[in-house]
Length: 155
Image 1 (cartoon, one colour):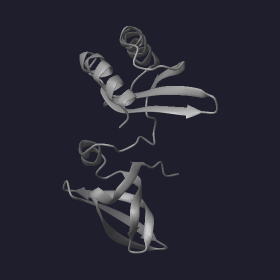
Image 2 (cartoon, helix red, strand yellow):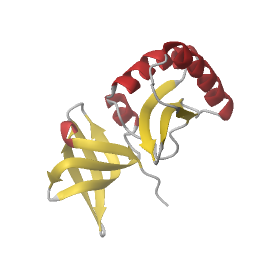
Image 3 (cartoon, rainbow, N blue to C red):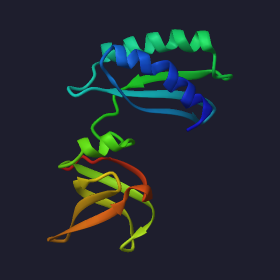
Image 4 (cartoon, one colour):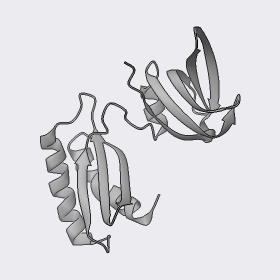
C-alpha cells in the first residue's frame, strides 16, 4: 500500500465508521496526465449517491487540512459495484456461495485464472467450484497465492 493510500485510509476510516459503512478499497492512480484518488465504500444494503457525497465532502475537508497529496487529483467516492473486489479475509468469508473470479500469482493445476462458486475459505485456502464443460471440479487455491479476486456477475 502506498503512503498516500495509507494516509487516506487513516483519514476516511473514522468517517465511514461513524456512518456505519465499510471501506472496501482505496486506489491512487494516474490515468493519462491526471491523478485519481478513488475510495470505494459499501454496506449490506448497498450505498446510495447521498452517502457517497457525505463521505466525499467530509474526506475532502480532511484531505485539504492534512494535504498528503502534492499533485492535483480528482477525488471519487463510490460503491465497488456488482463485481466488488475481495481484499480482506472477511470479504472472502462473505463471498462464500457466490460467483467469484480469482487470479493467482503462479499457476495452480496449470491455470492462473479461476471463475466459479466460492465454496469454502478457512483463512489459508480458498476453495472454488469451477465448471469445465459439464463437469464440476473443486480447486483449492492457497490464500497467499491470490493476486486479486472479485465477485463475478454471471449472465
